[in-house]
Image (tube, rainbow, N blue to C red; front, side):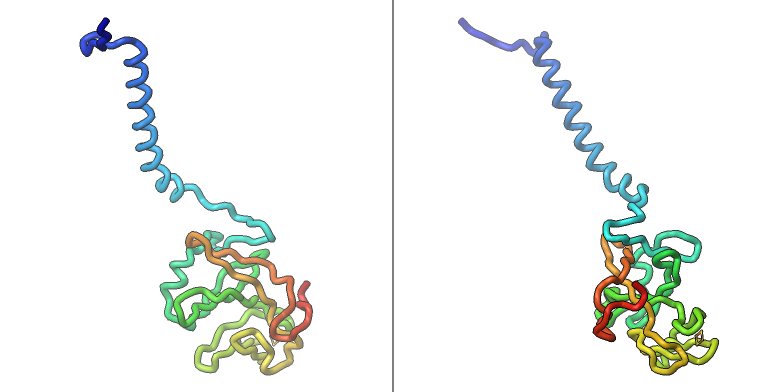
Length: 177
Ligand code: FES
């Protein structure tokens, strides 16, 4: 006995199978096409494990790493870090972000200060304190080095984490913890 599937009158199960396969193919194609678009428009989470937060600009918008890394090596970029504290990030000579940032908050009386690229120092305009590029005190009256944060880049987002471990500049526990 010969079994044949008629092309003119396909069985219901064959039609269902074809419909299912067609639908699955369309869903897979559409899903893979829409995923990058959806990922672009959905903002990343703003708090990470370990107390990390996204670096933001002064308007509160996340700053992509590529925006800061477009600046020349040696640039100190100011961002809003932990608890909104102004924080300097450094573009390294290899074009990546330094894994450490320093708070723009003078340890004398809390003034903010600019980076002086000629002297390679942070120089506080309030009472003349100076810090080296790592935030060590070069000249008082500031009593303590600048607060450190950890910096990590993931998918072009900049994450700022509290620094709770030993301060590598002093070999002691961080004074700000
Ligand atoms: S607040 Fe910076 S030196 Fe006084």
